[in-house]
Structure formats: structure tokens, C-alpha cells
Amino acid sequence: MSLTDKDKAAVKALWAKISKGADAIGAEALARMLVVYPQTKTYFSHWPDMSAGSGPVTKHGKKIMGGVALAVAKMDDLSGGLLELSELHAFQLRVDPANFKILAQCLQVVIAIMFPNDFTPEAHVALDKFLSNVALALSEKYR
Amino acid sequence: MVEWTDAERTAISTLWSNIDVGEIGPQALSRLLVVFPWTQRYFSTFGDLSTPAAIAANPKVAQHGKTVMGGLEIAVKNMDNIKNAYAKLSVMHSDKLHVDPDNFRVLAECITVVVAAKFGPSVFTAGFQEAWQKFLAVVVSALGRQYH
Image (tube, rainbow over all chains, first blue to last red; front, side):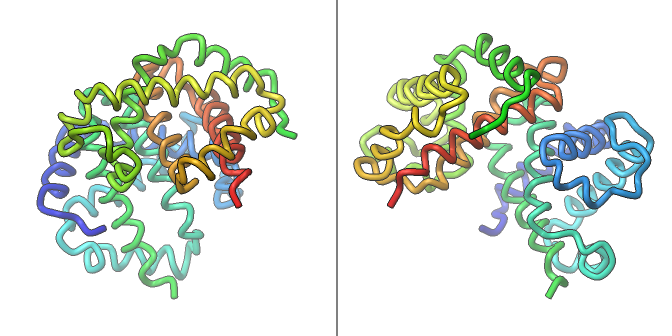
């Protein structure tokens, strides 16, 4: 389900509206993921504090959104643009790729909460497709 | 047998008591048909589904959204026995409606997005989201149980 020009435009338009709040979105989505999908906590056993608003969660949420921002910028070539991130996730972090979908769902819920008027069905479908393609690009180097 | 904590029970009943089925149902179903357009296969008799605007304005979609959302009430009222309470509905979706059960999962995602947007961050907290998604996961599982 590759991105059409319409999808790309919709994602860019949504990103323009939400990017100022990106750090907060990332932190909130990550915090919710750890609560709603507790199996994801296994990747963060080295954190002293996994609660919402904590240092590690805030910092890491920001890092994740940096990756999303990169993906938005490299939308026309996600495989190329996310190559290094894919290698990081594949060889070092070794995050099970099923978790990309989980985090994508949490991001969508948080965007719906924070930007209910902007997260229309049309914006939703474009973002869902985009995040699926990002997940695919991130998974490229796994095997 | 699903174990519910008191906090989860409270979350579900709080959310449900504030959900307007006539509002959330149509929005969730419209969103499903736009975000996962292959789900339109089940609604060939519904008329114009050609654009998001047409879907949003379609009265059959709205009515069906209410029906589907109303079905959740059975689960809310039978939280300790959702599997059995949904046995007949499951058979119906399998044998009569021939709905691919993955559709239940994606509809649940759409319902969650609509509920989240409606309630906002102070009500739809991480704890409430956890309870709500767990509840919908149980419903989805129960609906898929009688497929063969």
C-alpha cells in the first residue's frame, strides 16, 4: 500500500499542524504504549522510571519523534532515508518489528486526543499508510 | 475467564455512560470505511461510499454505526461473560454475514480513535486507554470465536 501523492500531501499538511507539539506527542505516545502494551516494557528494563513525565520517557519520546520528522522529510525515499535507523534497529536494538505497529497505534491515539479537528478520517488514512511504510523501511535490514 | 481490576471496570463504565452511541457509532464506522477502504465490500447496498464526504453523509452508514455500537452494550452489561454473551453474534458474523474477523480488530481501532478524540487527555488517560483497548480486544476475540 504505497504512498500516493495525495497521501504524501496529507501527511505533510498534518505534520505542519502537529510538529510544534512533536516532543509532547512522542512522550505521551511512548508513556501510553508502556501502559497499554506492557510487553513493550521489556525493551526499557534499564530505565529507573517508566512513568509518564519521567526523564527517560520524555527524552526518548523526543528521540522517536526526531525519527518521524526524518521520515516526513525523506518521504520520497523511505528505504534510503531510514537506512541508518533500520541498521540501528536491526543490529543493535533488535526491537521486534511487531512493535512498530503498536507504537504507530499509540501515536495515532495521541494525535486524535491532541488534534481532534485535524485528525480527520482523510488525515488518518494517510498517516496510517505513512507509518506502515515507515515501519517497513525500519524493518528492511532485519534479515 | 477475563480478569478485570476495579480500575478497569470503573474506566469502562465511566466511558460507556458518557458515550453517545448515535454520535460515536456513525463516526467510527465512517472512519473505518475511509481508513480501511476494503471494508466497504460488506456495504455494497449502502449507496454512495465514493468519497469521505459521501460516507460521512450516508444515512445507512450512520444507522449501521449505531447498530454496531449498540452491540457493544451487550459486552458492557456482561463483562464477566463476554465470550458466551457473544456466541450468537459470532455465529451470525461468520455464517450469515461472512465478515473477515480481522475487520473487528480494525473497527476497534477506529472506535478507539473516535473515543479518544471525543474525551480528550484528561478523561482518556493512559489507564482508561488500557482498559478500553483491553475491553475491545475481549469483544473482538469473542466475536471471532465461533468462526469455523
